[in-house]
Image 1 (cartoon, rainbow, N blue to C red):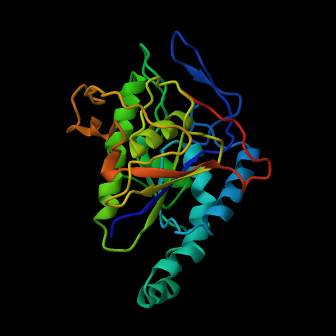
Image 2 (image 1 turned 45 degrees about the horizontal axis):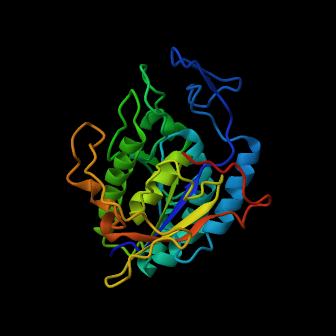
Amino acid sequence: MPITTIYLVRHGFRGNWVQDPLTGVTTSTVKSPTNIPSDPALASYGVEQSLALAERLIINSPLPTVIYSSPFYRCIQTLQPFAQRLGTEGLGQCRSKKEEQEDKEEKTRQVAEIVGDRGLGEWYGTARFDHPRAASDAILREFFPTYTERTTITPPPNGETLDMLHERCAVAMQAIIQNEDQKSKADKAIVISTHAATMIAIARVLTGEMPKDVNEEDFKTFTCGISTFVRRREGDNLHRRAIRAPAAEEEKEEEGVDGKAPSNISEWKNGKGVAGGWNCTVNSDCSHLPNGEERGWYV
């Protein structure tokens, strides 16, 4: 059954690191759980935000029953409280009586699966040196036992231009949506945890709204804010986001992440969007957070 709703969230407040712009060497004052300085855990305040996020997501309608994440520690950690809530109480809402009984008997589904995809990872721009990479699947499972990686596309080691970032997100989202559409279970909604720049790019490829100025502040990215995207139905007007009308200028075909056009994936532009297009109905809502909107960011 095709999915109808995508919830997009940015990770919570995180620890900091410093990168030498000449060498690319990264350092941090607080040790990362993965021993990668540029892969920090959430700050204590970010953990509080993630708990508030879980409380909100578990009552959302439709309930997101599939969890995707960037493979960086902070993004997985942001949705871990929700994965715990979903595994213990949420999935029963979407399962048959037989499946519910099997879970009760076996007690194996205490935490929902979190699917990592490097196509949802951080954007660093381009550089002469290799950019930081997330930890391996095996290392991350030491901290998040239900984590598994199913990467659709991997960013190049020397980074990406903004155009390449958008193409990478288009490839990743097309694959993720296609995979979920093919499932037999009625998973009507998914949630994705990612980073600020990536979140903006995903929003653009879902709606098909690519501003003339790529640095335009269009989609919001507050920490632990929730953006909602609803799939367009056949016959819908190409209404995407009430905040601003899309640019009507014809766009050129862009090169893919690996220097090759990714199967005409650039056709998401001009209001089309990937997988039939999506409307943004909520733009980084933070009403569930005690201090509301914080740390907004734009490319």
